[in-house]
Amino acid sequence: MSGTFMTTSSTTDSRAAGRPALAAWALFDWAAQPFFTLVTTFVFAPYFASALAATPAEGQALWGYATAAAGLTIAFLAPVLGSIADATGHRKPWIFGFSIPFVLACWGLWYAAPDAPNGILIALVAFAVGTLAIEFATVFNNAMMPDLVPPARIGRLSGAGWAVGYAGGLVSLVLALGFMAADPETGRTLLGFEPLFGLDPSMREGDRAAGPFSALWYLLFVLPLFLLVPDAPKKARLGPATRQGIRSLADNLRHARRNRQVFVFLLANMAYKDGLVALFAFGGIYAAGQLGWGSVQIGTFGILLTITGTAGAILGGWMDDRFGPKLVLLAALSLLIICGIGLVSVDRDTILFVLAVPPSEGGMFSSLPEQMFLVLGGLIGVAAGPLQSASRSLLVRLAPKERMTQFFGLLALSGKVTSFLAPLTVGLVTALTNSQAAGMSAILAFFIVGAVLLTRVRQPQI
Image (cartoon, rainbow, N blue to C red; front, top):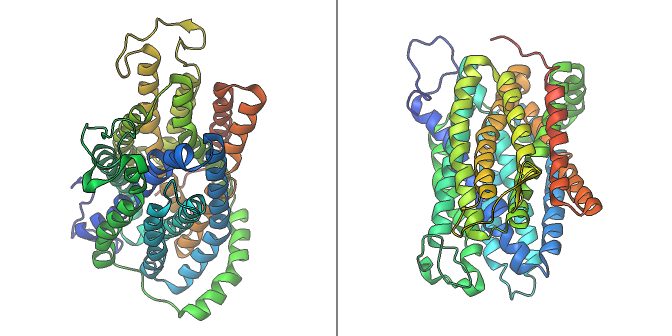
């Protein structure tokens, strides 16, 4: 990693922060990732659907409503906040401000116990508030990149951030599954231990502890950002900046629309990000239904995805600087489409839609469909990191520097404004066909549309 953050005194570009500052900036992704890994995907969300809600179907629906509500709020507010921040200049005060409700919301998840009278409401509100806060903080963290490195090194910095984030997700997932979250039937964690701190498996305290764990992790690892990363100079006071920012938002939306390259890229990002969100949201559910996987198998699968995602982010960052972010995005989308077709071709007795396989001989991941699912899922992890990293790298190349935070707000808008659409499509197709595979196939359309739109974006030379 040292090569990623290397700077030299000979550089003539003022946007060249020191190695400690770049490492501290990347640690933001490490600090935030446990929320997405533990709460949103692999630990708390399955607990909510399986143990807190009346039925898994009701739990999935309620979780989807909370996700959609948070997504729509982010869609409307992120560009406004970005516009205000561009007017004030500072980004770190905004990150600090949103860190407070994020930490409180994560901690609140602990109180969503199975026997709590308002457990469902507590979980949904805490999850929605936490999602809002960390997504807003991420917008301002992303917008700091052009002030830290010259344009030719944005790709490596972005890729390094995603890689560090994936690594943080991996470490936190191993710690949570290996030492805190236990199987209620056996009372043992994934590594075969009794839960730490006397956590009660019957009350799913290990699953609920994912919230406070994410809060403490964030508090510890976000500190270097505030201590070591230089902020942009202050331009205006908050009051005038707020008025200026709100007034300029409509102008910036019109500017983005007039800037055909940015506008088409944001549409492409809207399509493929929706598909990626749905793919990860339904991946565990699909594996459970098609392959009969339980929490141990899904948790192990999550660890694999995190490992391959880390490798993909590192590789994608190098390819971004070598070949440009557009080519990286197209390659990642192609891999996602191919692997997505492969995943929907697998069930317990079949691969490639029609090839029957012998039954499993026992043991975890012993059947050919399970092994194929693991390989394809690992490749999806490889593609997911570069897809997200190269998206923000391409935006840095396309957007005017003086409006960078606003355009990252628009990037958040494009990634959230229709974030309900792909999950809704999966649910509708699944209900109409009574087939999980058919429902998951709908995600491929979002990747295809995103790739087609992306081919119409002209990548600027640097």
